[in-house]
Image (cartoon, rainbow, N blue to C red; front, side, top):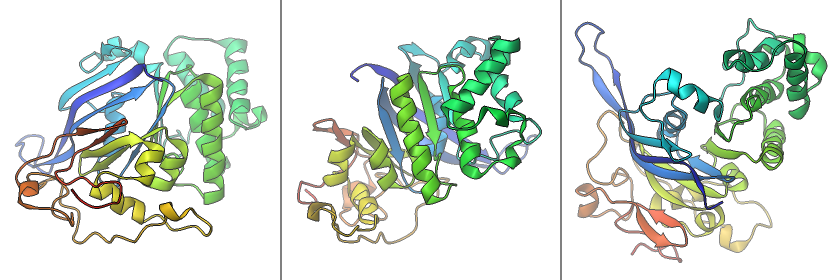
Length: 332
């Protein structure tokens, strides 16, 4: 797990909203603003944060579904940031994505057989009887009946549709899958089934995941390491258990305090509820200095002036904070 499979360096993505195609103008949304992280082969990197923090945009940047405004993405040691569509095609087979809405991500006019066969046709792999056999095999792998090949997406439940999305992502034997909130649209009981499926598939096919979610409890359960995002930047990165028990950044501490306590839970995991005051600033005009200083309870003058770098706190822990927490949860 020490080998870096994918690496992002100073990734930036700004969207222009308003204005017109002819006159230009409009405002710039700072969706992702200088994110650097690495994904190691065979691990699950969780990416967590509030809605609108840029985590889904980051996931799309990592697989080149969005073109970055600035920064680089390296996969397997090669810079794929500026590759053309034709040059990127071989990497498409190794970089796949599972989307949040299992219905919107499937073509309602196509049967399951067509949906799962498309990746092979696009990349010129398999045909005829061999293709039909592979499609049925994919359905079996994700726990669906091969007899469902002639059904349309609307004939399945939400959990079954997400399994079809997983099968499509697996079709070309990828090395890395970005799962963009793959269970948030599902019932709680179905969420557990899909998470267990992804876990089993990772072991069986030696997959690497980037698992995006807003639920820190779910991310802690599935991830080896976690990256916490806020307003387009990474606040903290660290091993899952260590980050969960001893957060370094005050924002991570606040997120963890929102997880409901479970009866019989270890005492060190139970936390005092921290209610963040104020609203999340607009990504159109993010605050200067630390993005979190307008809501941080330990913020001082330097927080509003100087943007803190992502500093190594030892043991694989990194945090971008002028006043990091110690082991007791006190600001330094």
